Length: 315
Image 1: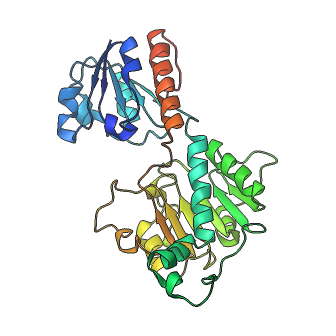
Image 2: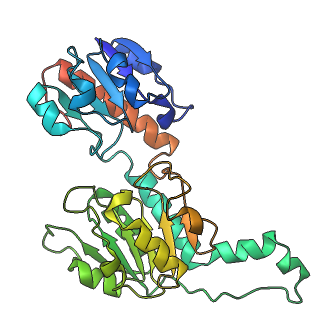
């Protein structure tokens, strides 16, 4: 079995991919530009990808391809309908990054609610050293305890974030399309209106694309902290940038973008240095333990496929 990894660099240079050699003949590419996908997968039976986009245009010439393994939970970068018609199996990895993403979500919330960007800036630029007092207490910050933390998307990650929020003393509200009995769920507009912190944990689908529009952002409190660690396109990025720049949002934490890496013309580029903005380079999923877990799950998906079993299939 010929296994080709198309974008190993996105999995981190410290992740050892050699265990895949126990499953077949392994070829590893650090990165693969779009025009090289077809050639590099021409003889492959298994493709392992993270961010590379695969569709009928670049897969139609890959006659030996039988299985696509995503090093991710989301699979919006693969044309699953085309794969289904072509008989190519697609597997994702579910649940592997729950703790890592929840950890960064909490870190962003704590950073933004505590106004650490401003306080760290005062130390870095020397104004604290030059000041007359032993401490600075402006800008004013507040305790998380007693705040309402809204969780949009109440799956594995959303529930873990809710647990952390509860442990910090927050009232938790959640929104999901099909709530189960006993879950702290409300409608999306109420979530937007009542949240002091609102974190997003939704897949990108036709229904969720642009879900957090300018109109929904306008429902939020002017001091609300908005955090997106899901997919960039679930929110109107231009509206988010404008809301922060104009003081209509208290803070913004984002790890995911509609274009990655985002270019200089992206609306977030102009606000990236604001003290109430925390932008990270799509790293929430990537703690070392998480990536090791992901690789182990990919290997299990390949083994199951060889046995004729369906495991983590999304096509």
